[in-house]
Length: 231
Ligand code: CTP
Ligand code: MG
Image 1 (spheres, rainbow, N blue to C red):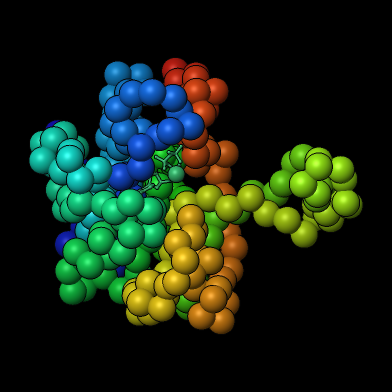
Image 2 (cartoon, helix red, strand yellow):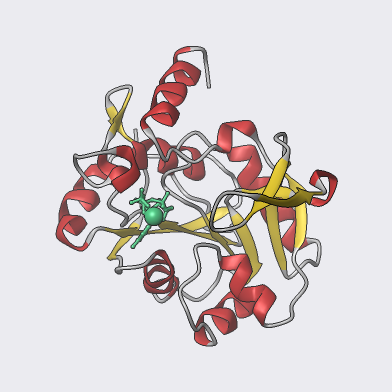
């Protein structure tokens, strides 16, 4: 059954899904790789569409696969599919350009974070709604972190207490994300980074271990296990 999006919702979710998935190894573009028999992108969109504030979903697909992705997602949720670009930032910009008038909160969410719970979409959106211009979900860093030189000699130990690992969805007041992309220079892998360059404050909310980014084969195996145990 196709999930209905909320016509009274105030949130648009952009889903960059145009990456190759080089670190996952040879095969189809990562968003189209199967996890428990379904493409990662289907898992991701199903969870986004289950978040009650979501009005619009725009997916940036690999340029060669736009039609196939449209057909694949039609039974999942009503989504707009555009062609992505060579860098993640270009894919996000393409998706942002396809958001209709209406939603004033825009979230950017990696297709590769396929198991992200709908509740995280809601908590990021709620923080923007409450008045924050830019909001990112974060987790504490669990490993000790060292800075090293080119020869792998340790230069020092970074204070872990002040570090956070950043996930998506990242949420923005629409005008802030639009301004950040208009001002963007070198491609970054993170939209909040563009907003920081504008001097706009970025605030953190608690992330979720289920929002892990599927990057390497180990992550795919972990995600299979999490799904099998009820994620
Ligand atoms: N992405 C995108 N357009 C690009 C590059 C990345 O839309 N040109 C998307 C990916 O599809 C993914 C998200 O950005 O959902 C995060 O990127 P990453 O995890 O790095 O995915 P890939 O770029 O596909 O993986 P890799 O870097 O291993 O090739
Ligand atoms: Mg990448």
